[in-house]
Image 1 (spheres, chains in turn cyan, blue):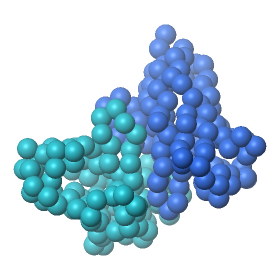
Image 2: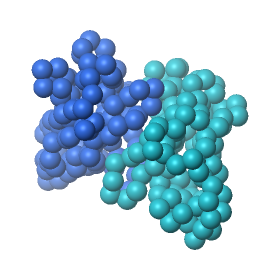
Image 3: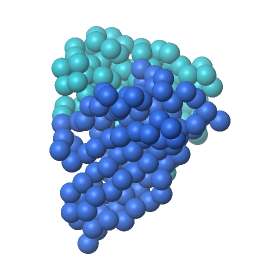
Length: 110
Length: 116
């Protein structure tokens, strides 16, 4: 099944801003928007954002999500060491009748 | 406490089946769909399918059609995922995850190792 496209890696300095992207098509990201999860090594994923820019309670305001056409973005400002993790986007695909994930982006905080 | 607690690690031989459980607590089990997602070592997340709490709406990902079965027991707030005809490529961590328009709660994961 076709997935969403994410850059494999992004590196930014401490206290800088990182923007992660997730590209799909009109049947998934362009239709329903995307959700973002964070995963630290050896731990289950954690929801960060859903339906483009809704944050669950307890998620830092340094995170914001958006969508433009078929591309969703997650912006993390004021990068901290604990932001170093893998980030995955996901979306419901109406043509596949399936959830699809991106391949994940490894964020490194220098 | 809102949580999903999964069964322990499994080691299986090729061709065997495995059944993983996921017990929900701290919320109304019958209000939410439950999904299964797996992650092979060093790889990304792969959606396997979804079951609604009443068990009458079940959708499997195309990659697992014919090999996966998802069931639920509302009396114990537990969902199950059984994968048959295991291959070495099925070695992965299997997660259950609750959906509210997105995957907002995850189990701790169950490592399934397929090895002869």
